[in-house]
Length: 294
View 1 (cartoon, helix red, strand yellow):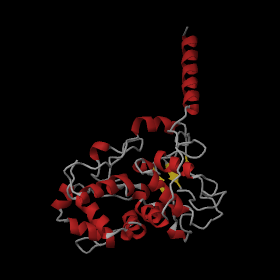
View 2 (spheres, rainbow, N blue to C red):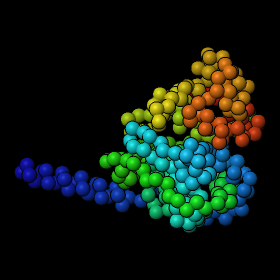
View 3 (cartoon, rainbow, N blue to C red):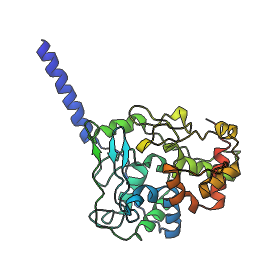
View 4 (cartoon, one colour):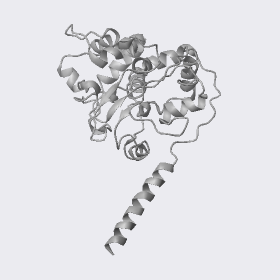
């Protein structure tokens, strides 16, 4: 009887794993037929951190040819090649493949991406946003070199397990405008909770790497490569003497009110991303962050 029970249990486990492996994920992607604007796409790509993450600047890597290693508790991840190379980049992709990857975190082969890719923040990108981004990426020269393979040990190397992770921890980005708020505040909300994905770094994570939503923007003491991200809750920033003008200037220049400069990953965020944003967008981000408490 004991053997029968054990055997039945093992069969159940094997069946569950097999079902999960073949379980399709994602939504059907409609045709992206809109004409993209290269300049708007390049702007959105910078705001979204594409260049910062997918360029190994320290090693002199070509733009978007693959990023520097992200060392985490689960292994080391390497952002992939996003150039137009057909073998090692996105040169063989369709616009629909790109839309599925960006908004749903699913590869053209139907495999889930690891959540080191900040796709959860891009789920509300419009078809026009996708068309603009796609048009911009088509201008990137091909680089015929693959990014290194992720160095992830068992069980985290089993991508099928990400399907369960997604089912449990994948939230929708809160980017919809709120009635009664100013246009600048709502634009800041759209950027902070969407493209610029501030919560990806400034929110603590649980034991399986998911953001603790109830502590959004309250800081993270365990970033990849040993970094830290402080709280950017408005109450904490105000207590430290920050103003909206200070924050907008820091996002533009990398210089804090005390005269210090950002270091680590935040320095890269400014260097490759936020310093290229318009004054209006930086002011909007600062307005939202300084008047938003969770």
